[in-house]
Length: 625
Ligand SMILES: [Zn+2]
Image 1: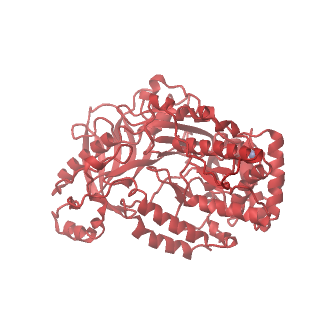
Image 2 (image 1 turned 180 degrees about the vertical axis):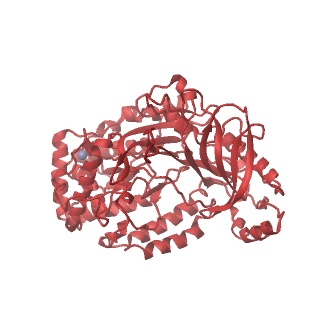
Image 3 (image 1 turned 30 degrees about the vertical axis):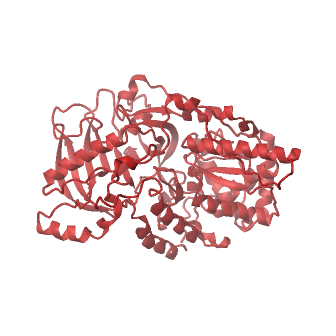
């Protein structure tokens, strides 16, 4: 049986695919936050804030939980040593609650603490939405899509600035979860962003009733589950639903529900909002899934959509107005030529191109659009290297790869750096398809189609983060695109992937099938599109390769849903491979190529990654076939 896993073809690589990703994940979990926060003060003891036992069952549960709670995650950090631009200071230890009433007080207090701690942050927020139509065979399938990307100002009002063309805003930004006027469907990106908090201003006992339901584990984290209902006459747009509160520090880790009651002509989405413990003491909003629609018989309202909202870049420098005029630091290009030699004209040209490349990579990283160099890049570079070695390509500088953090399917290259979007890595079914999309950019490099050299002038890097898409661009002319595609096919046919090009053909067919409905996912913002006007134009020579696309063949996986491969750390933007066990496909509806699915992150406490990674990795390596 086929499963969603690159391990199928990982044998092509000398080193084990899973070995690379497993180690990477462990390291990222274990070391990322430590680099940001100062060492815990030894004089401050770990916080013993488990709920004091009030009943016999609670005693037993508390005892069971005592082992993991000895992790340093709750150690408080002295305020003085938390330097600017790093994580907020962990809250001071609080007295252990003895009643559920006290627990409610604690999580209300922690929620206000979180709102305050994040109030000077402006993370990147992306919402990708697919409208759905009902297909008799496949169930709900995308009919059209929408894409929003912006910076979320988590200050007083929770406002946002867009990277894309200015959406019509004005008063609408004040409508929470607003889907303005049902008959004229218009999605407000602000509506999705709002769902990071239950209630920005009035999350308290005056406005809400809280009732304890039960205990429940989310991933490795034991939670107390509460239903939350707005009190009568407490105002419009109040949160109605359920919250999960972790039982050590009493932070909310998940919210599921909607807002109620809605103002006239406004409609609130349902949402499932998840937080991650990425810094000591706080759980920061990371993923929001929204879904509306009912395709059961007799239902009149056929408005239906699924949407994923992702938030990252919490640790980016706050992009205030002055920032636009701040000179950026460009790392000096290391001079590796022998001493006492002047640069030849060709060397000077290459140095110039590298300077442009470095400028662009640095600027995109600073804008929160590019993941820092990491372990996922090693996997991508291994694939590029396979293409290079088998084609005897010897470039003056090694090819580097980086991951664009956004969902739209796109690749581009600047100098010797190949950039591929997270969304594209997500949907590629196998390593050969990954090699195919990378080979197109490698071909541009080999053919010398360098178009970034104007960015060696530093004045061209001085723009606001939101202006990135207006100020940077790496689109080739059609002639270069065709030449790169032709070269790419040659490279692939000489490579270890030559026998797997049927899979590439299948991927392109699946892309062609969905392209007319997925205009937003296929709209690139920096590079050339894979498809334009509903027509795939990348690597067309390979599209006829392989068998016909057949959704009913369960062993034919032509493309994957979004979100299946790459995991982004919303605090520091590091990208790593998802460690999900493969799940068997039991019907054509399970395939969901290029589709949006709910989020279900495996929650773990800050600093617990190193110990917890082991069982997941083991199960992965057992299930790779
Ligand atoms: Zn191209």
